[in-house]
Image (tube, rainbow, N blue to C red; front, side, top):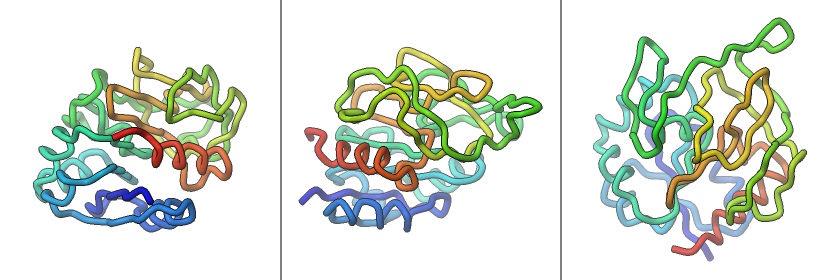
Amino acid sequence: MSTVTVVGYGAGNTASVQFALERLGASVEITDDPQVIAAAERLILPGVGAAAYAMERLETLGLSAPIRAFGRPLLGVCLGQQLLFERSDEGGGVDLLGLIPGTVRKLEGGPALPVPHMGWTRLEGVKPDPLLGGVSDGDYAYFVHSFVCPVTDATLATADYGTAVPAVVRSGNRWGCQFHPERSAATGARILQNFLGLPL
């Protein structure tokens, strides 16, 4: 049985992530203990809300350093993906974890594209990666976000919302999903199952 540690820092939808993982047979621990996080087998960084508040919570709880140093599989979800980057324009600018180069910016949207981007959107340009095994171009995922990561060499898949939205990213042992895999039906379950099977 795979063991997954979920960072519980008051800025993430931890319960739904926990239930989705447990349905796949994983043992799940939610914690804000830096030592437990540093020793975790696999780590998920969820996130909902504002980047500045999330980073303030991580810093206050002493979690930024063990997350930055974490050497085994790490998955950022929604805001958690954005936190992996260097900086966000949100709220006049905030420094993030700095694990992937680039700046997170406001999603522009348009007349027929309200912000936040909320709902089911197809994944496009899916590159081969262990996290995305069995996931194909055109598969749907469920998004809720107002800010968007930059398209870089780390981008594994995008979604079209008036611009290319990096839907899945990777840098080394750090992956991110801009969408909510725990709310993305079969596609999300496959991604979480793949995460549980990533080599340590």
